[in-house]
Image 1 (tube, helix red, strand yellow):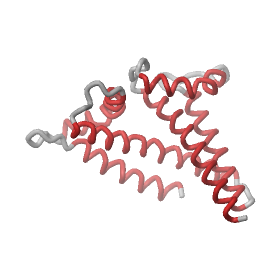
Image 2 (spheres, one colour; image 1 turned 90 degrees about the vertical axis):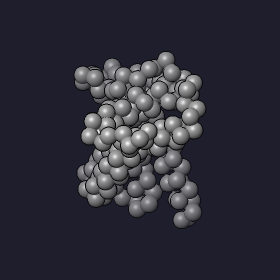
Image 3 (tube, helix red, strand yellow; image 1 turned 45 degrees about the vertical axis):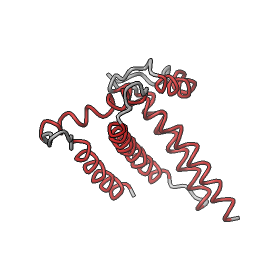
Image 4 (cartoon, helix red, strand yellow; image 1 turned 90 degrees about the horizontal axis):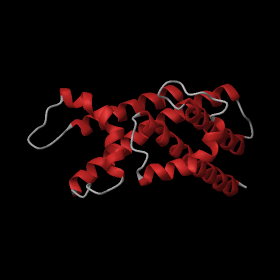
Length: 182
């Protein structure tokens, strides 16, 4: 019985997490006004629109934030964590579940930025970022974080250390979020 539960929890976590990540990345790219003609953006639009478009009828936009994407990501996270908790323990504590869902979403956003910065750094080392469809999206996503850091941290020779500072800051935020929401 334990192996079946472990496999079920793994599958629920993986499938829900991938879709929630797609919704959150679409939300973040929309927030920074990234190019939605990009092939990766088009992929995100195609897989998230079947759920987001009907939800937009009930959840109005709030300024530049796609509130329907926020609601969808939160609801899917609550469902994911609820199913996992039911499988593991057989019980469900709704107030705690809502708090865990907020923490889980905050950690997801931080991980998206962390991985974006790492991928961006690696592609800059390889030097083949020109023509890569993901590079402009990564630049759009990370520039709002890197721009204020670049004002404080100067270039050292040809090295831009602002991504390193941002990665350190994100890791500290991950530690804080993990402490607060777990």
